[in-house]
Length: 297
Image (cartoon, rainbow, N blue to C red):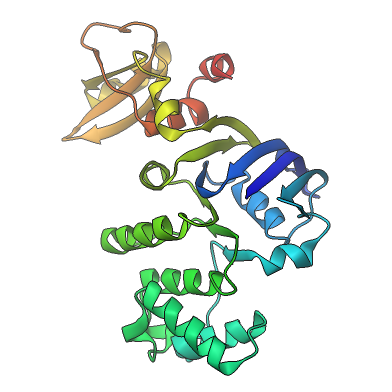
């Protein structure tokens, strides 16, 4: 199974070009869509999920024309949006049973088997009779995945699923997504680089409505090998370094600032080479100096 997106564009009435000729081929497994807030990720996800119209382009899921055969898409789609509402006074098992009926699972015995199986799969069985208003953020996200899996979907879209989760819940959610991604297409839309590093065999970075790079995360990070340098500097010197160097990222470390710089050779005395990671690629493509980004594209 493959999801193919070709020359997809979307401009909002206020003039914002959310997507500009986006083309991607997404195979079975976990696919990471990485980009900053406002990059166009959610617009792309809503179009694929048949919740929004595109201005031009095409999207196909095997033999399904996603833009024109919306009912067929919904039959094989599981969707967990960035924000979704739950009835706080309803128990998890009752609401999931209700969603299953809406999904077309008419027989009560079939619904019971499916609902109980999903609650166990998402580690919510012990909380099945709790009201959803008592659930933690991570439990709500796992319930969201449970409802997305109703009907045995072939395509699952999850939009910013780990934002706000504590480390333990994040690991639990990662494990759940990895298990699901063994059998279907899972698109993970996020701005958290480590989510893609940990979970995805293929990915794309989208920025200002355009795909700036795509491929295997490890291969993409290795493409910067020998080009990333770092140095600890006093915090007060950061502005001066920014004026003369192509700094792609900076962070505080024990009261000093660690800067990472892109360059063919050591930019100045005191810089040391480092093995690049996906975060370096992300910052290089999204926040690096304009001339560097243009050259890389």
